[in-house]
Image 1 (cartoon, protein in one colour):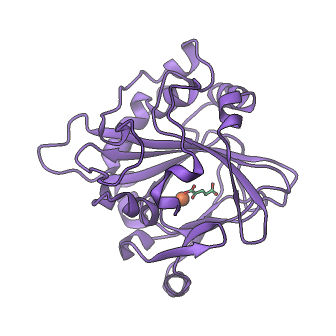
Image 2 (image 1 turned 90 degrees about the vertical axis):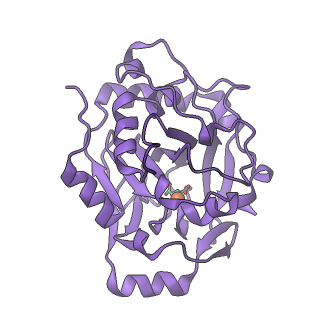
Length: 283
Ligand SMILES: O=C(O)CCC(=O)C(=O)O
Ligand SMILES: [Fe+2]
């Protein structure tokens, strides 16, 4: 079945709630291909960063800037996905055309019993430090590679919290988290939603929505990939990646590339990986 672009109702829902779930965006073959390549990807494991939560539980993530012809890049650059992002990102009049860029992508591996929690935060809470000025022109897209549910530490969001604008962030253990006071206040009037996803589902979320996740105490892994998007009009003046991917329009590929192109894991020297020392927003 060909993928569909978003309806006006879906766009409206994203603008009101700050997030949108699209079920079954990828089929079982696409998910299986992604998972089987990711699980054996030596570049991913070599560049994995361990992030401890306040209880000492450890999440592994690998983050890269340049979307290539590897399996992740083909997913990130897929025609219908980029079209959906284009429908959701704010734009300046006259600059709408071909201006969706890839900021970075990350593979999040929350292993059974080991994978740690993420503190409440806004992604723009970090990206502000990179001196991007326009949060409405930035978003994240989470692809469920395995099922994600309350038991294995799925993402939680505070519905509508993107309307608060950016809130203050500070260190909480090794992670940077949003001000607890503002999170507590938000939770008095806004709903916390557990975003349960089946493998193949996609979650689009605004760069200012407050989100977190619990540790994975279950027997099942929770793997997901998150691609973050930006518009070419939104410059990160303090952006640390040398690749300038964040203001370079994406080279779009057809949806079927993911399954039909001969592709593999990340290319060691092509992807421009993040190291823990390398990024101002982690400091
Ligand atoms: O994977 C998760 O549970 C959350 C990760 C996240 O929000 C992030 O890396 O910005
Ligand atoms: Fe996040």
